[in-house]
Image 1 (cartoon, rainbow, N blue to C red):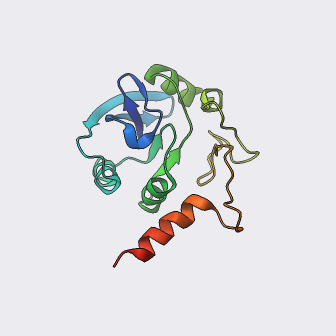
Image 2: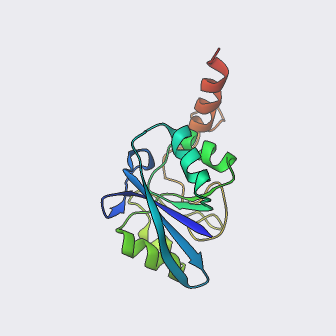
Image 3: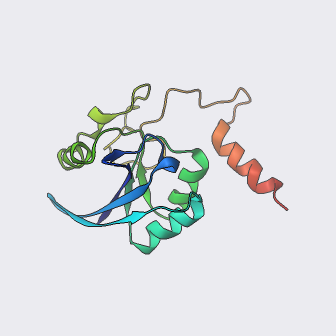
Length: 152
């Protein structure tokens, strides 16, 4: 499996969209070996997703990520473990130990059955912000859908 860390310098970028490089690792059981990196000249989410797909990435570990970008990546078949903080060595060790929940970003929490490292897809480690914009629908996902519909 190919694991991708969305980094800024030697740590996870606090926001996926602000990452300056993707560090790639090949995982096989307990072994995690460097498999390269991608410098990111483009900030376009579609370009980044294409680059990740071309490298065969299966899983991304990152800090915060916008709903639109997350939806784009997950629709491409790549899993995401968001809301993680720490330097590269800490994150790799926690991934190996299945203890990424100890590196959850401040202000974020894990929900029962949906936390970081639980093997679930959408909803892992959601931020405490309101998921509902007052009209009974989730805010960010609907913003993405409204943007798609409003384009000619």
